[in-house]
Image 1 (cartoon, helix red, strand yellow):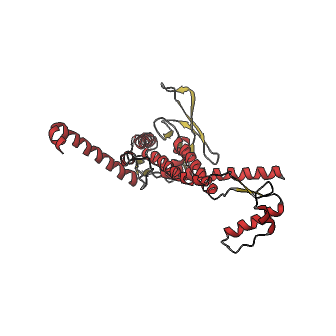
Image 2: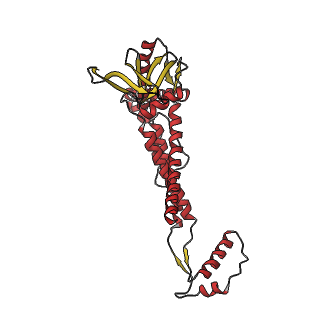
Image 3: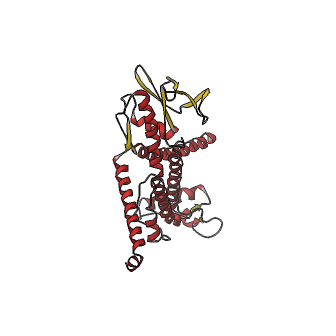
Length: 316
């Protein structure tokens, strides 16, 4: 029974960690699923699963049969001796989630769409989800330990039960407590008395603010790689306003690269199958990208003005 109890507690703890990771993984994946929008996508290709395959497996294979298009994750490029000059096999091999086999010649009757030009899956969704889950776990532990009082040591079971009743009454808000003589005697000094054992540091609850800022930093880092800026209204004691504003910078290399990989893949797809699929940024990303380009234009204009009239810009 003790072994089973330990094993069960371990399973519960592990399941909580899995739940935390799944929560953040689902949230981050859902955001990436919203980065692009497709026009003229055939009915047999579902955008949601296409984006799942691209982000999770790094690629998606597509062939066509009598019922429509078949799409699979993790397509492989086989086909020796049918290998191009770069070492890529030109034979697509894969299987749908319900076991249908995909095969064909890439560029003739089969196409592969990649998540990015490096042909890699979106690993940071997994690693950032794991980091966020660890922060949540740390925060939960801090909260739990902040509720702990020092442990009492009792000389016998009678005193232990009496002290537990006293503590329960205090927690319940009952100030009308009758203390037994056993407890009164035990409260005296000496080996037979009730003593305290310090095993926790309740004051560490203050560290949750740093965990919260670390959480925000990971989220900010994650979405700044995607061209989006996340701002928070608080700052850590050691942070200056300039440092906070410096975190607003974003990078568009990843979303632009992912867009290019999808457009390149569907360019081949359209040519093979006579379709007209168009891939572009969704509204949120398109608006942010427009604002990003406008900021760059303003910066360039300000730099040119400063170069033409350095004295005037210095006076400003």
